[in-house]
Length: 488
Figure 1: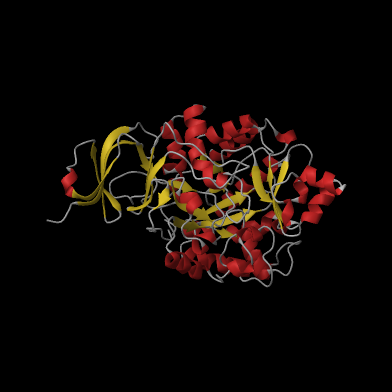
Figure 2: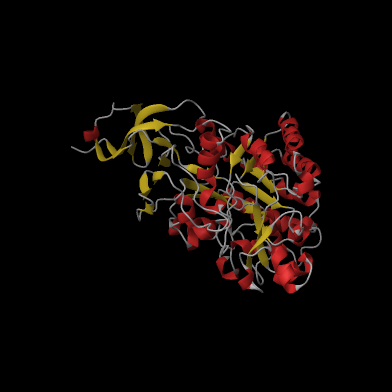
């Protein structure tokens, strides 16, 4: 007689992604989906082909990393060990205005698109080609994608230090509309970066106009996260109102020492905007950021650690101040000599991160950079850090709230159909973990360490990670946009 379930996960503490109370449960999986949820012990083990004893560990939806730069890595390195090892089952790519598709390069990828890889990594002149490549690679995680404004600019403009012309905007819009037709989640911008900073608001307003009819959204790395952050947030709200779409403010932070302590007014701005339009944000659980080595951010106010340098690779891992002292130049000159390069900026304070991370509008995104030789530890540790350091050890919020910020709320905001909750009929993206021991092991000095306390991970019903190792099964797929109304 055929079994009723492919897999039965027994006697787990179910935290279902809704933010509600945990309960002891059995979960039956069939054909990649959650087929039945019952009280613990209620499902006969003989009805399943495979039985996993939960022993009271926590079972939650797989974590959704809403802010990644895994665009090319999901194809080139489909094992996706940094993500699956910490319980992430879905990544959203195409953030900060940079995406792998649609892109046709004339030379080397411009900053910050070089964060995604060298020129040979950009093989996707249209969005459908990228979708097909993801599905062919079958990574260990699901993939959903935004289209980057800077990527579109690179396809149509001869230089970036000016506004796009009407003809160039029309070309960008045509590519965006094609991507939306093939399931893109929406448009992202990275207006703080030099190659998008010269784009006036009107350029983005025009480009964003097709989003509403597609049921898409607008995500933005703000034009400033420093002194002008409130003006930058107002610009984002204006674009969302004009386009009639939800706004997601990427990695919301108060960066720079003069900005420390402003999280209260920043969150007041967000709450005021929410009265008129759908607005949310994401945040990573660290007081340090990471990106390319930006001359505008060079300062002696906080430590800046160089993560890579094409011109001086031997300087990777060292502090910019120490490099400048060794070369007997100021920090700005040292940063110029290191270009192109990447860096970690220890530019935030704990209290601001606490306020932003705990706000009801905030979901979690790692913003990890998988191509960095010495990556920020968030690449491997962001989600376990929320559960271990912030929820358990610091008691910043309950476990169920932490899980909601990494699963259900994320799926609702980005329109990921039948994901983000442990509910009958939903896809079986699941993570089994020990709430008493889960923690991030990655550090700034040793960043490529898998998390502790993750017992097992399922993607689309397939056991993908167990006993601190990949099982060899990869069941991820591309997730097209769900155009149904989203909650903000």
